[in-house]
Amino acid sequence: MGTQESDERAGGGTGRRALLGAAVLGAGGAALGLSGTARAAGPRQATRHGGGHGGGLKGLPVPTVIGHRGAAGYRPEHTFGSYELALDLGADIVEAGDLVPTRDGHLVCRHEPEIGGTTDVADHPEFADRKRTKLLDGVSTTGWFTEDFTLAELKTLRATERIPANRPHNTLYDGRWEIPAFEEVLRWQDEQTRRRGKQVWIYPELKHPTYFRKLGLGTEERLARLLRKYGKDRKNSPVIIQSFEPTSIQRMNKLVGNPLAVLLSGASSRPWDFVETGDPRTTADLVTPRGLKEIASYAQGIGPTLDLIIPKDSAGRLTAPTTLVRDAHRAGLILHPYTMRNENPFLPAEFRKGGDPDAYGDVFGAFRTYFATGIDGVFTDNPDAGVLAREDFVNS
Image 1 (cartoon, one colour):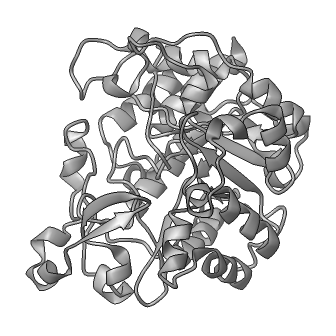
Image 2 (cartoon, rainbow, N blue to C red):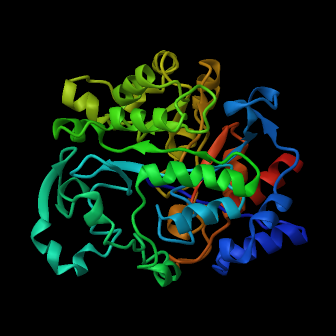
């Protein structure tokens, strides 16, 4: 998932203060048994998609709180520590898996195929000669890439915090967790569902599928095989699949029955599969009523950057909302924009407090502003803040 915003607003009530405090203090949710607290403090009046209480997407609360790469505000992203803490803090869905392949064809969970910034690979002299410079979706990128390692080799590495300047507290957990294989995530999902007594949802993303297809490592077919193996390839399966490449989602629509979402970056950007095939359209074309109607022919939702919901001015302050929420809903699509983060640099300017890049701003105020647009959910690095903001919103 791409990068962007965050928010905060003071909430009342002992349960809410206890939940937020546990996360901010990095209290180790799973070890302290916070999952019951998170559920008890969660909203009881949130609406449901379609107004019903059935299975599949319609059974999820709205606004849906999606743990972005787990609880990445508190633990190194895409680790089981981050995923489990997201559940402990009340996330309705965990984005368990930005999926990239290994040399021997396994799918693993990393933000990008380049892993120099999210693992300790640079500290492994045995892998020094694996460092490469590659063209990744048109961008020259230097580092270590998952497609040059076997799964067994990647399992010798340990995850590290990706943005330590903003989250120095997360570096405490550097080296604690290994890189998850997606097949392990599917088994973990089943185990967590049994242990917690409620269905755990995941939201994997196919990263750079055109790039990997050209390397002979097509990721869509690999993902479909795993979903079929675990019986999670159906319309009501608790796995939503997303990608920034529309043709990748079209491919998945032919392979599985899962709910699907097209991710959308800045208005002037072009999906990389469009660049490769010479399709001149930009994201701005995709968010027109015509573009949304086309997306709705093969997907159930979109994941726009928050700037497509409410643009910012040159000073970083929010302007008037666009018509995207209305237009997407008219096309029958749900919207799960990204990404809410608590720290000042990721917030709209009017919600920042001071200039400390590690300090929290008025995240609840920002959540309230975005929820008021009618979005169906949001990706957040801080699921506890999302849960409390939703409780405030639905009870206001």
